[in-house]
Length: 112
Image (cartoon, rainbow, N blue to C red; front, top):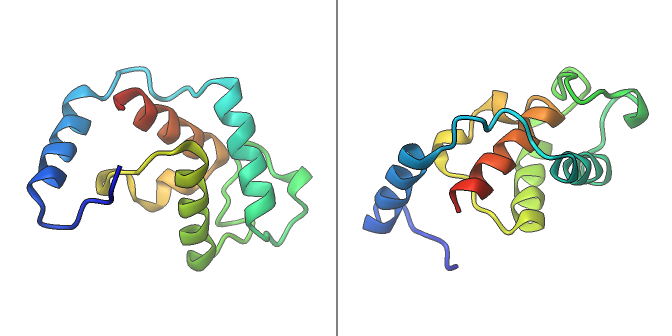
């Protein structure tokens, strides 16, 4: 799917679709998604602590995730799951933990 430019009618329609169809149980990602996200974070981001000490609910920013690394992580996750995150989910808390990233991926994939 080609990228949608800001101001485009398709973008507004897509945002509306995202809000209207978000499944209620998007807080829990599947084990497969969680495992893939964990691998992506481990391979894509240099943290200040050893990765094996980072739990799925640990704050990645406290572990050393920078804003620049966050942008890279966003692009790698989108590519890995062939998904595009709507602007509405691009908040700091979306990428604050491995679980929150996996839940966002699961939600975006569920919406299609």
